[in-house]
Length: 83
Image (cartoon, rainbow, N blue to C red):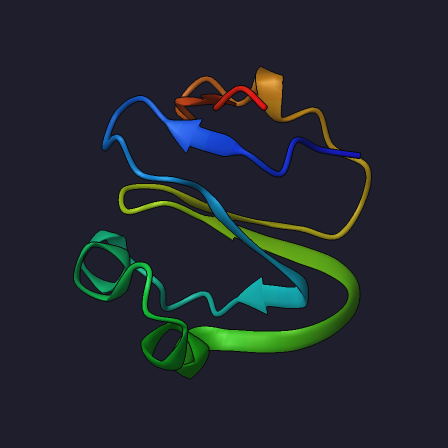
């Protein structure tokens, strides 16, 4: 279970999450910088995968398909945006 109000303290963007999707391996920083938060543009690099979840802000992204502690990812600057 994860917070649905994550915010990135690096780019000050809300972290979007997409159930049953992963990011294509060709995704890069400029793709997210230019396309967040436009879902219609993001879909170009989203791959359907049941049980997975794709996360992204404007500077970082992750595809998760198993239980993962995101706090161990040192390069992620995502925090709870407070409810």
